[in-house]
Length: 631
Image 1 (tube, rainbow, N blue to C red):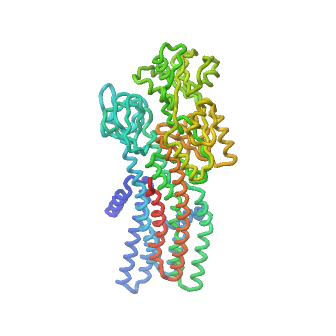
Image 2: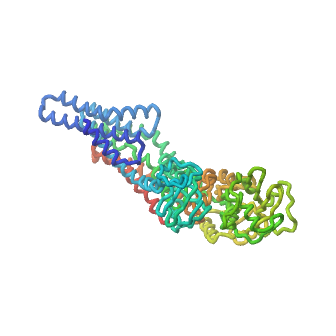
Image 3: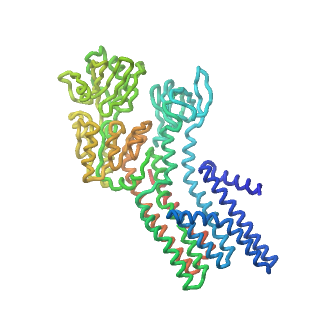
C-alpha cells in the first residue's frame, strides 16, 4: 500500500512539476489512487469469476467494491453540481447516471471501467493543456529568485523575495534581474525582449530604470531596488497569464445557455433510445459520449493562446473585454506627446529669467524631473548628462500640469504655461508659443523655461492607415500642448481632428462625447491620460514598462513604443473571437456526431469513454493556431 502511494506521489510530482497548486496535486493523486484500486478490484473480481464460476454473488460484491471506490467521488461531485446548478458538473452528472444504469443492468465491469477510462483520458488531456503552461513556467525562470545584495561594501547572495525598496544589488554580466530598480553605477546592454518583445538590446546607464525578467548582457551594474519582488511589471505579466484560464467572454454565454438545456436533452435521448431499442448499452454509450469536456475549453484555450501571442510582442492584456469591444472599435483617440509623436523631445531654446545659466536651469528642473515618467521629464534628464543634481526632493506628479518637489522649505515646480499662470505667477511677455514650454519655478520665483520640439513618429501614418483598413472611421488627437504646436503636428499626421490645451478632465469629456456614437479606443502614456484610458471602451497605454499607472488604468499595455502593435491587437482580438465561435461549433458538432454513432451502436460505452474527449483535443489544436500567427 505504502509502495503504491509513493509511486503515485512521485508520478504526480514528475508530471505536474510546479504547474499546479498543492490542492490540485492532492486531487490528482487521489484520482489516480482511486483508479488504481478500482482496477485491482475489477481485475480480482474477473479472476475470481474464472476460478469460482458458481460464486457469482461474491464476484458481484468484489466488482461493486471497485465501482464504489471510483464511482462515489463522481456521485458526490455530481450531486453538489446538481444542487448548485453548476453547468461545469454536467460531465459528472452524466457519468454518474451511466454508472448507476450499468450497475442496475448488472454490467459491473462497464460501471467501473467508464470512470477509470475517463480519469486516464483526463490525465492525458491535462498533460496536453500543461504544454500550454510550459511557456508560463519558462517565463517565470527569467526572473532570478536570488540576488547579490551589497551591505557595508560586502556582497551576499540572498533570496530575491527578501529585497526591499532602497536595497543595493549587484547585477553581473549574464545575470537576469530579480527585481525592478534604477542603475546607480555602471553601463551595460540589457536584453529586454521578455517584456518588450524587442530583439535589440538597450543600453542602460546611471539613472536608467531596469526591470525584473530582463538580462544583463555585458557590463557590471549596481542597482537600487524600487519595487518588491511580487510588485514588478514582470510578475504582473505572469499573474495575468496564469489567470487566463478563468477569463470568460460574452461569446461563452451561448455555451452557458445551451448547457442549461443540454443535460435534459441528453437524458431524454438516452431514455428514448433505451425504450425503442431495448438496448441499455446504447443508452449508456450516449450518456458517456455526451460528457461535455470540450465545452469548458471553448473560450479559455483561445484566450490563453492570445495572451501568450501578445506577450511575445510586449503587449500586456489584462481585460478580456478587448475581445468584446476591440473587434468593433471604429474611433481611435491618441494622446500626442510620447504616443503619436516620438516623445523624445529635443531642447531647441532656453528662456532665462532668474536662472544665471541654462546649466543651472536644467539642474533645478532635474531635481524633480528625475522622479517622473512623463516624456518631458525624461527629456530634461537627457539634458542633465553629468547627473549632478539634488535627488533628495519629495516628488509629486501633478497630472496634466507638471511635477513638484519639496525639500524642507524649498519647493521646485516644473510645469506648463497654463499651470504656472494658475499659481498666480506672471509669465514673461512676447514668449513664442512654438514648441512645448516647460517652466521651472523655485520657491515661487520663475527660473526660466526650456523650449522643446517634438516630431511625429515615422510609423504613425502607416499605423493610422492600417487602422483605417481595419474599419476605424475616425482618428483624433488630444493634447495639453498649445494650439501652434498642435497644428504643426497635425500638418504631418493623417488624423481627422486635433484638440489642444486640454486638461485631463477635458480629455475625458472628449472621450465621453465620442462614445455617444462610436466604440472608442484611447491610446496614451498612462500618466496624463489615466482618466481617458479608464473611461474608454478600450484603453491602451503606450510604453507602459515600469509604469504602474499605465498598467492599472489601461485594458491593454504596450510595454514598448511600437505603434504597429495597435493593428496587431485588433487583428488578434478578431482572430481570437473567431476561434471561440469555431470552437463552439466544433464542440456542438462533435457531440451531435458522437451521439449518432452511439445510438447506432458503432461507438460502445467503453470506446465512448475514450472518444468523448476528441472535441477537447480538436479545440486545443484549433486554439493553438493563434500562437502560430505571423508576427
